[in-house]
Length: 438
Image 1: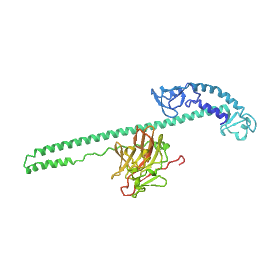
Image 2: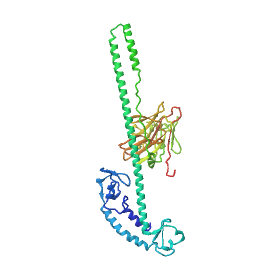
Image 3: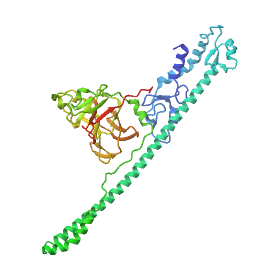
Image 4: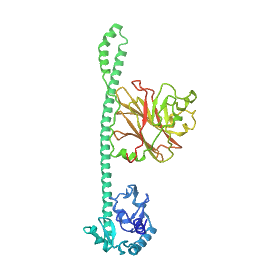
C-alpha cells in the first residue's frame, strides 16, 4: 500500500460509518463496532432500550455503551494530522512525463494529472477537478452509497418482519380452527358415551325378564344404539400449514458443509458409493458377521465429518423412501465398532410414508403430518444447542429443537428401511456442496 493509501486507511479507521466523519464522543457496543454517540442514538427508535447495530444488525442496548477515550484522542490527532500529510503528498506525486506536480484529478479515467497532462487531447472533454475538490466529491459519493445500502437492508428487514407477522397470524388462525374441531369432537364423544351408558342401563333393566321378552324389548333400542355408535367422529390428527421463508436456503447455504459417509460405521446391509455420497440397502451383508453390532438401531451410517463447535448445514435427498431418519449422532459410537447405536445417542427427525402418501415426522416427543418430502436440510448450531430441519424444495421449516446440550463430538447420522413399498431397495443421497461459482 502506498503512502496515500495508508493515510486514507487511517482516516477510515477513525471514521464513524454513520456520519462518515471523524469520531465525536465514540462509544463501542457489544458486537465490537464503534460509532459517534449521537449518531448511534439516532438509530434508536422510540423509547426501546434495545435496537440493531447499523453495521452487523446485532442487538445492542443503549445502556451498555462503552466510551472509547483512546479512540477519541486518536481521532482528534488524525483529524489535525491528515491535511499536513496530504499536503506533503503533493511533493511526492509528480508527473513522470512533465515533471510537474499532479494537482488535478480526471474523473473519467480516475487518475491524477498535472497541468500539462490535463491539456492533452485525451483529456480535452473530461471532467478534471482540483485534487482536494475531487476528494470531497468522493467522500460525499461514499456517504450517499453507504446510506443507500443501509436503506436497502432496512427494507429487507421490514419485509421479513411483515412476512413473520403474516405467518404467525395464519398459524394463530389455524390453531383456533383446530381447537374448534377438537371441541366438536369432544362433544360428539361425550354424547356417544352418554348413549352407551343409557344402553347399559336398559340392558340391566331387562335382565330380570324372560329371554324372549328381553330380546323383544331390547331389539329396537339396540338397533338405535348401534346406529348412534357407528356415527363417525372426526379424529384425524390436526395438520399445520408450512410457510416458505424468503431467502431461507440462500442464508443456510453460507454454512453448507461437504458431507461424506464414513464406511467403518455403516450397517452390514448398506452399500456405499465410491464417492461416499450415496447409500443403498442390499439383501446381502457387505461386512463380516462380527461387525453386525455397530449399527443395531437401524440400517444406519454416520458421516465422516465431525463437529465440536460452529454452525453447519447439509442436505439429504430422501426421494420415495418408505422409512428414514436423518440428524446427528454422538461420535462415541464410531470409536468402538462393537458398540451399538443407542436412541439417546441420536438427535434426528424421521419420515414414514403411509398408504395415503403422507409423511409422518417422528419426533422424540410425538409426530405430526406433513406433505411428502424429497430433500431435507439439516442445520446445526453446536454452541446454541440448536438443530433444525427444513423442506429444501419448499424452503419451509419442519421442526426446530433448541436448548439441547451437545457434548463431545457429533457426526451426521443417516438411517433408512430395507425396502420401499414397491419392494425396491431403499436409498439416500447427500447433496453436493454448491460453490459460489455454481
